[in-house]
Amino acid sequence: MFATIYLPDFYLQAALRHQPENAGPVALIDDQETKAVIIQLNQAAEKVGVRCGMTPSQGVARSLKLVVKTRTRVQERLLDQLLLQFSSTLAPYVEATAPGVCTVQFTDVRNLGPKVERVIDQLRETKITARAGIGPTPDTSLLAAHLARPVLQVGDTKTFLASLPIETLAVN
Image 1 (tube, one colour):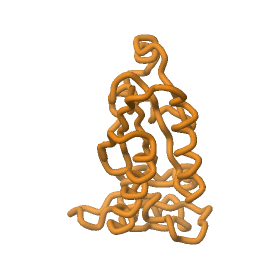
Image 2 (cartoon, rainbow, N blue to C red; image 1 turned 90 degrees about the horizontal axis):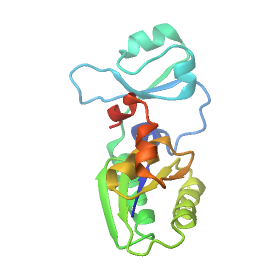
Image 3 (cartoon, one colour; image 1 turned 30 degrees about the horizontal axis):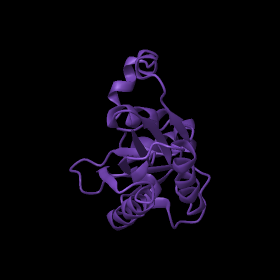
């Protein structure tokens, strides 16, 4: 069995991690790209019509209150290390799969749900939003993690996959 622990809006979480609470619209750009476009945003920005792929000026045209931040790679590395550290408490076989994603392979499958929920709660205590999926393969657990609120354990893979909309395959 596998578990994937996933940090939604990873780059945005890293950029805002030690910032004062901001309930207003926030968008994130990658300052190392040739064309600055919004890569992640919070719900407040989405509500005022800002979308990923817009330029910062297009976003500000939707809302003058939009705060545009740039990625903070140092914070991203620290957040990834925290995720890896917490994930390593579950089992010895842990992979840093992608930024904000860790995959854990279990050898002992007893009480997986409570074990994974404990890690999600520990991350929440450190102000990190995380989701987790548990499944028989790494891919299944990754898909489950994207749909989890906050933990989703897949029992029957066929039934789980059959119920997914085709857009789910675009999960990155």
